[in-house]
Image (cartoon, rainbow, N blue to C red):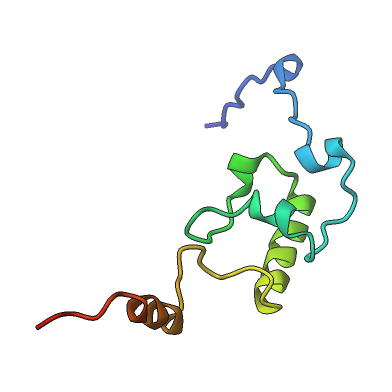
Length: 100
């Protein structure tokens, strides 16, 4: 038995969404541009996926690479809500002393 081919109507192809960065004129994503990188990171520090941001694959790869470079250079934190332990200890010391 021969396999049947699906009939496709090439006229009804979905229009491609333009990449938001390329349409804004951003040619290269720099790891030092923290304000731009923070737009593509969640509150927990995760990189927002391409299907949600609408970036092209090339732009998403450049963005991911830049975010990882910025994290390693300590320009971005790995998790936004993280508070180092030494800062927590300092906050506890500022409370008034307990009366027994």
